[in-house]
Length: 271
Ligand SMILES: Nc1ncnc2c1ncn2[C@@H]1O[C@H](COP(=O)(O)OP(=O)(O)OP(=O)(O)O)[C@@H](O)[C@H]1O
Ligand SMILES: Cc1ncc(COP(=O)(O)O)c(N)n1
Image (cartoon, rainbow, N blue to C red):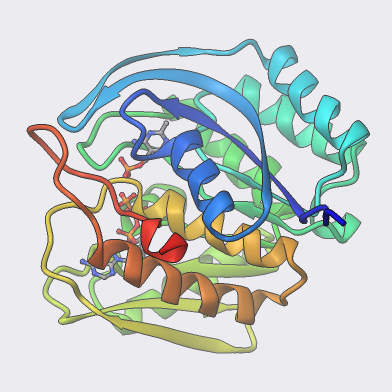
């Protein structure tokens, strides 16, 4: 008899190059054994060398996508990626409350506060940062910023493992249950250490730094794997630990594609 898998919803932008965004989330959900569903917020024109432009989806259409799947199929965990504008963020926050997703409704909700692509191209309008802080963070089970996003959201400049703790405290003050301060951008560190905290526990998740230029989609792949493991019923520390092991292998198996930065790869999980 067929078994219905757990379900995970990603609310994010499309990457035409297939390495990040919705495309990375869906293939990660598949590799991690959950049924993926999508609410698309923007369509980017993107390849391995950068983002050439994007068009936003109207906020009411983003909300309608969330309601359509939540009402009919059910959501075991959800995540956000590129949200583009304050209007979309406001619509997402309101809709998540309506369909009972988020920390207060016991359906885990991961916020990956994507601000720019790894090439430095903006994916979020500047005025939308305040909406991420005030409307999304208080609803989040877990937030997963990289160091640039930490600086934009809190003003804390992370340069080492001690300042990673300061950043965690500053982010927790904005209201999420857990924060994961990712250390991928501490390029001088021979290890990639991500700091997970709920304000009581400070857990350092460490992996060797793999020598590769191809890390496109790494942040999305980590956040969506954690979301998949939360959908399967793991608690936050276990889901993040599994996610960290997952992304380490994905970076190790990353492949060149195009003239620029190639994508991390979850294919190893299917072998
Ligand atoms: N070279 C590497 N080797 C191993 N792990 C890495 C490497 N680079 C990043 N990671 C890990 O990948 C995850 C994503 O980290 P990062 O801090 O780069 O986030 P990000 O900037 O959102 O990602 P990206 O911009 O690549 O999508 C983290 O768990 C980080 O520790
Ligand atoms: C649609 C979309 N969402 C997210 C990212 C971030 O990924 P990266 O930091 O690897 O460029 C991206 N480039 N495009």
